[in-house]
Image (cartoon, rainbow, N blue to C red):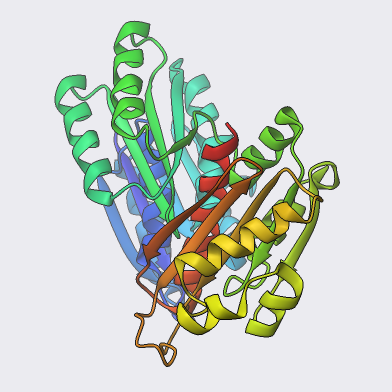
Length: 357
């Protein structure tokens, strides 16, 4: 079986090679590697036609990875060249052509359409395991993947992605793989990532948190400064959040922290708004209100400039509180203003998850 990938670059927009790589990696994780990759420009119809015909002659499966807004146009163009009906999967004799948008949409299409098609075509079933985790160093993940590949004798494929500290690892393998072999690989990652792990399925972090709060019968309050309500927004995005969320307070100014959350003026004067003590008092103030059984608080410097205390950009203090105790965690996140705040939001949700699990 020989496979080819035709990647079409949209010349009217910035080209994101990683978006195409997302699709290719998903195919690889499913056990289907491209033996050759053709890189074409969107505007060159002649080169596209020549490449499609060449692939039809020399390859069994061809993946056309195109800009999402051009899927319909390229499907019609390929169908005309292959002399078949325009479909997401087009067959010409024993040859199969797939038109796939690049990016996350394409990755989902590979999992939902391409791999099931191959299962029928080759009577081969694939299985996969998914792990979700927050804050795991890339070096740790890469080291575990290398170790698993060495012990798995090439039977496993790995697809790793990460956004603002929220990581996802998909482990693909043949369904005929002995269960003890597959379990051993999964255990390797569970043990290696246990301090960062929150799911052994594809459930997002905020949904895990809401379901766990329901299960534990907890009521949540959030006090946010530099994250601007981002933690609360994630919670209310989940249907049924009203069962577990009492309120979210964005206390940005020092006066708001004092009046709304009971943070002491002396704390703000001596320690500053971005401090362990302020985060503690923000979370403790919510618990003291009697409206919740668990609280979270965020305070930090998102950038691009620091405040007048010379504390570094990216510094933040994240707190999780209950009636028994309040824990504060210090982080320094790197990146843009968006990256710092989004990482802090993910980390806060993860700290909350670990507190109530």
